[in-house]
Image 1 (cartoon, one colour):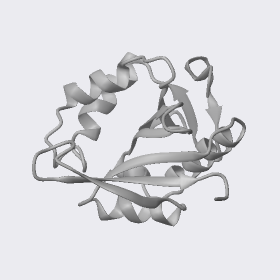
Image 2: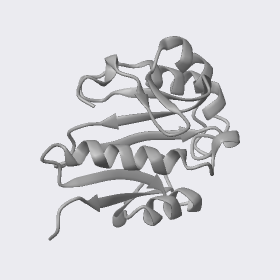
Image 3: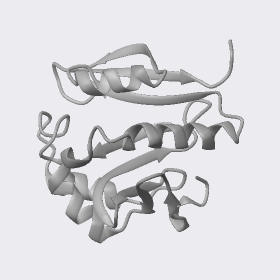
Image 4: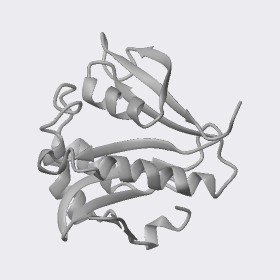
Length: 165
């Protein structure tokens, strides 16, 4: 993932391609219509800006199935002794097809090639599907963060340990 801005990653059934401003402009409004972003009233413009942004050590990718845009993923490579899955949004037509699980497997495999000890993600407490998804993939709840994104809501910090304790 270190040179991720330059690479296309081919997975079983889909590709991860470096995010472009054009793809971000298409995805932003589409993702703003699904939870958690819809519930939090994120605008398409705000998501477009985030997805199109470039940060060292935090690559963003378009998920494409047969060259069709299916979602986006953003990873912060060096967070707390391991990568943080900063963003995972898969359009409804492509959900429940194994894409998210394959992405988690890829992030874990990449992390294990470094000295990473953890994988991290934050999910909205109300988002039962996301919570169940991450827990099925070996993540454990570490903390509840009240008022982190929106007043009156809670986010849950989840970790998957990559080393035995």
